[in-house]
Length: 219
Length: 219
DNA sequence: AATCCTATGACACAACTAAGTCACAAGTTC
DNA sequence: GAACTTGTGACTTAGTTGTGTCATAGGATT
View 1 (cartoon, each protein chain N blue to C red):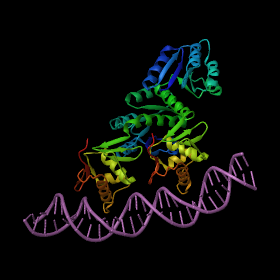
View 2 (spheres, rainbow over the protein chains, first blue to last red):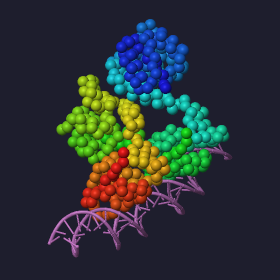
View 3 (cartoon, protein in one colour):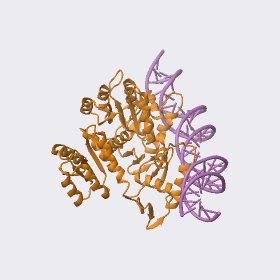
View 4 (cartoon, each protein chain N blue to C red):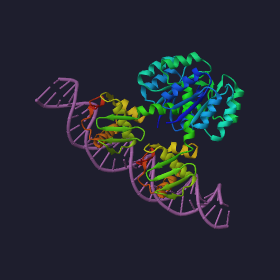
């Protein structure tokens, strides 16, 4: 379960947010002023911080400076229309902002999007006896390092993140290569072939005819 | 692959959205007025609908009423700052809204978030001892994987989604093949035959003479 | 009930399309 | 420039799908 810190001096707003995020399955802590917020950040690790700019005592920007070295993603809560605030916040390292008054659905969407973005970075992925370290970009199978090229690695990650899902060729291509797929070359096929060989995954990477590929089995 | 319907009268906006969603791996259909939108909803099943409130002829709210019983999730596209619109939309059953002009990234994030939330619900179909996983595109009967081709799979889904309903040949054909039916070939019959064989569904798929087929029984 | 007409079942096969394989050239990195 | 990565085209192999033919069954008409 992911933990979210809400730093917001208006208790009504803070609690409204909390109720809704808890309902979505997050664990939430509220701090009603910057100092308390800083204390929490010191003591615990959070997956995400929602930070009001206008705070008594310590303001949001200072707190942001404080959070930055830790690397926790931050969403700024800013007053309506205050564009310079947003820009300042983003420059200082906030990952996103949301304008008050906001609909709770919008907040949740942003929280989810940001957590998903960050989630990808610090993770290790595993599939059967294959372990993928996203940070060092290394892959081990049964403990032995398997050398993969950049494209092979990206493709593997995409497959493992969607194990047991039939992935359309177009989608795979677009995710790994970042551009539209024109189905007249053998690029994707070749890379699949290389992955299958290097990992001995002749069966695990199943061809779904006229669709794409599916990584089958695993944990 | 998930299908999204975009109902938006400004073609430029509709197409912009489409291009971006297609790049993300979705299949998109655009309707430039409410009536066309209603037609599509009638004919096809979508995973998500993006719906502009301000539409010629039928407005967004009416269309929403129309979609509600089907249960497809809806994201409203509303004009800037029109708070009462948003609230009305949410009350009427929209699952989220986004304010124009929007950043395309935000739209995508919301689409993904919503599909993920809903995806947990709608991704498996069952009929008797047959389980259909829409995501991995696999079919199991009594636990054993049954290999189906694309057309067979699509046809099966159509039948199961309308179990105990007599489906006209024309309708089946148009749903699965996406084109008009000219009743002088054995195409549909052959595929029905293949399904019956692979699933041992000689009785379950009942022929309705001069009409089409009906999947009978099940849970 | 006998007859006729049409719809569907069964089947085999041809046409088509997709994917596998491979070798190599162009591009990158060290 | 050596070693490696990557994309591509030619070719091969394989899987899918539509179609015609013929057999059979269903329903209508008399």
